[in-house]
Length: 186
Image 1 (cartoon, helix red, strand yellow):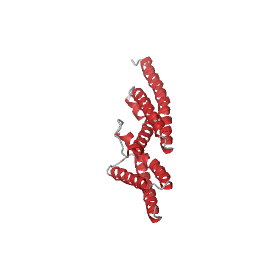
Image 2 (cartoon, rainbow, N blue to C red; image 1 turned 180 degrees about the vertical axis):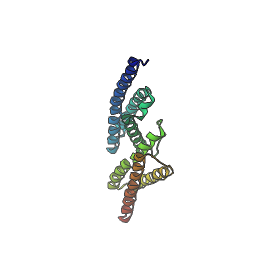
Image 3 (cartoon, rainbow, N blue to C red; image 1 turned 180 degrees about the horizontal axis):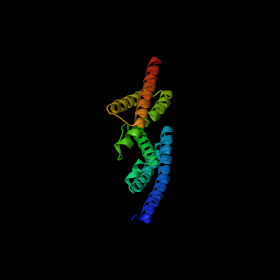
Image 4 (spheres, one colour; image 1 turned 30 degrees about the horizontal axis):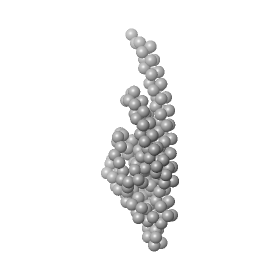
């Protein structure tokens, strides 16, 4: 005989943890946006503090997600981790010129990585306005490398494929920007 009490308790427990996951995902999303905004304003010290904070919040989010294998597939978790990846990669690239390895699922990493060029285009336009042509070229080269690496995959997921297509357009913007700077002799 089916024990409906146990079934109901399992579903209620999952729903409770899912609500916790959604709330913690919002915290990670908010910090991601704050990191990106601080880096765009060249406020690297506050950005470094935010990176420390987001690492702590991500650990809490991951602990909640471990409640059930289904949690990792929840949209709020996936979006939060992708935004985390984008923000932390952006911070480290602007600070060091390199992209660090991050302890996240491959799919989540790729989703965040594919969003990174959009922020890098914004940074390149800002740097171009300041006449920092070499840095603009370095950003273009990094986006070119990212796009080249992403092309080596055979993505079946439509969301990832759309994001990879967006990287191609970001690369074109950067190529046009670099060409424009060269033609103007900057």
